[in-house]
Image (tube, rainbow, N blue to C red; front, side, top):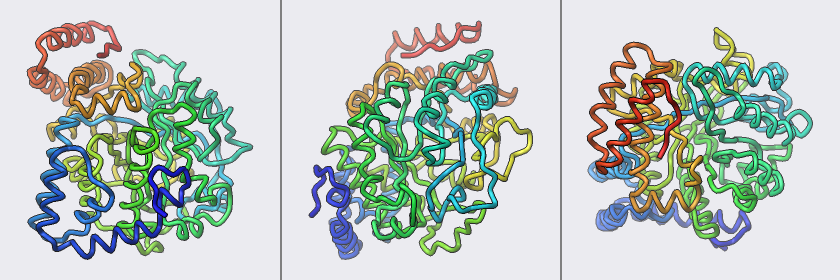
Length: 471
């Protein structure tokens, strides 16, 4: 029986409720009056239920689909302005004991060399990332209690935060590791992580168990209930995600929104981010063997409908996607992207991209500077801001500021100041010219005259060599 307040996975992600929601959506996808009613509700910027959003996703009326896109773009502008937050993944280890059939790290893959970074190697990787200009990382590791115990992850986080190279510093470490215990989540919280990220992969329990035939990840309920344990352990910000293409996309769409509703119902705050990766090629993984792959058009529609359904939640797209695809979905709801990414263990210190330890193939292979330049050419502000996390504006405190619109008083100033840091320390000549013009034009958009004056002074101090101002 569906119960968003239940702590049992099979009750807050209720299979029959998803099937009923999809049947309801099919029955009403041509119901123009109902679709208009749902869109009017969405314009209030309070979000939609999984069932209402499923109707929009099922709708195929071209005129209404364009209305969905336009509303998603407007909601994105209302909450995130034209800022795009930048990050990079850092792969610590590809040792793994699971049997996930879609991931090349699975335990019986004998083609892939196994590698685990030492703390000195992590230091070298972080310096390479700092030399690109990154301030925010998402660390990744396979599940292996022997090679990758929680102590290794904690030591690695400590190493990352300790490195100050030239003007570089990693100011926020997000963590994407396997589901674990409340005690371990508490340790991660005490280590000062940003967001804890865990992809569900699929919410369809039967498919989930087939796709994870052995290993600790086989336990659907333990995996699905991980976010509740993370929040019990003190982690305010959690990030959801599914791997589109493993099961039917409308089922996954309803499932991830139900998960968001559950977190809101139980903890008073929904997910900090939602990621939308698609299955893509990798060592011994052929995406064509998965029959539920989705087109770019469906992918764009999913992004737009998630943005409308959960207007306050950050949305992430990685370098799995091509430049063309990323450009399209930036308009429809994406607020965070990776740049200059390498998905191999130890990849950032190699001049040539190593291919033997990658988790997945990268479609967008541009450097961080090229991505930053591209964003500004489209009118976006690349932001390296980590201020909310460091000022304690996390969880329900962040969401209350976001919902009231007050977060705007912090975000634009912080984006401009961190962009100025990037321009001074890392940018190419072309990127610097674009960025300086953007900063001048965007200063006028800071509504508070006093704040504008402070930002202007701080921007000049950054040029003179000072760093790390924040509101």
